[in-house]
Length: 137
Image 1: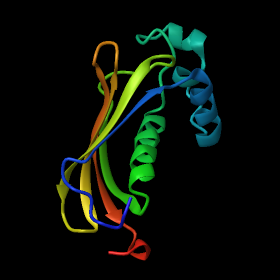
Image 2: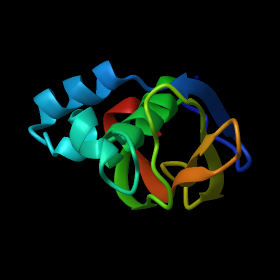
Image 3: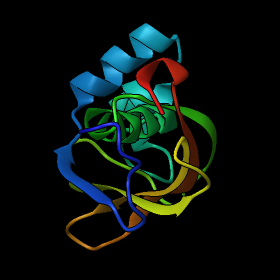
């Protein structure tokens, strides 16, 4: 993408199916090995009934989506909620929509992840991004 400021309404979408192997790898890398994420036996006895994704695995997947389209931008602030769990093996839709431009260097995205089967939102939030000054105006 060029150095032109992105326009309000820019919509980035991607389908994704998270795997248990990704949950396990994220746990290893992050150190967050809570059994709710990595232990199917333990998780099976919880209200979720199976392992659930790490919230930051979900967020970083959204951030990757934005970064592939706007490589000069970096997150400066985010607010996230996880109203429902994300399970391994389910088709998900990742979505980032540009909803506000504060300047040519600053913009705000609404983020969401939803299950494709039933449209249940598993992550919703907002992130402010700022263009790295080294990447131009």
